[in-house]
Image 1 (cartoon, rainbow, N blue to C red):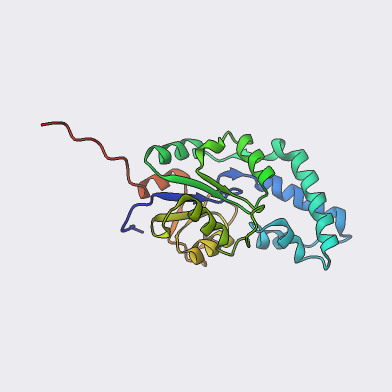
Image 2 (cartoon, rainbow, N blue to C red):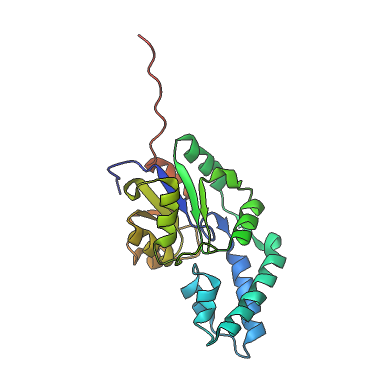
Length: 227
């Protein structure tokens, strides 16, 4: 896709987009299912809800708020304990973020993860929070993805127009939130969802590697030599 106007604002999902947390998330999910069910649900349930807040994911499986809270507690205890051992960095993420900023782009994170976990994930993968102009987490008092509210909140805080902004994510929820917010949707094919699964959501752009984003951001203007 050729954009009529270069992007000046790029918002990112976190898990599966900026950090490779698939092994960590799956291990925590399995631990939680084993702890709370005699017969754990199949893992395709996990993939279908991946990218939504924990309470929404577990809410599909149990009937009461108390049961959901107990599962959240189990999950978070395991996730935080195993975090640094299982989380990984994707290639070229830090370098690409620096180049995007050097090209004048505003950067943000919009994630369904809580603030504490977000900070730990960024730090574990060597991504300084100072790289981002805004970070919106599930702690914000707004509906969560696939609702467009968190994407719109990030744009509002950046005073950024949706017409020149993009949301980069690896899940169907990211694509739906981005479409509803009126931004350019960019599917991150380096995450756990397949190209076929993401293509169903009709993202504007599909990228194999994060550094390919650079072609959609205008480089800084070079000064003309004096006559």
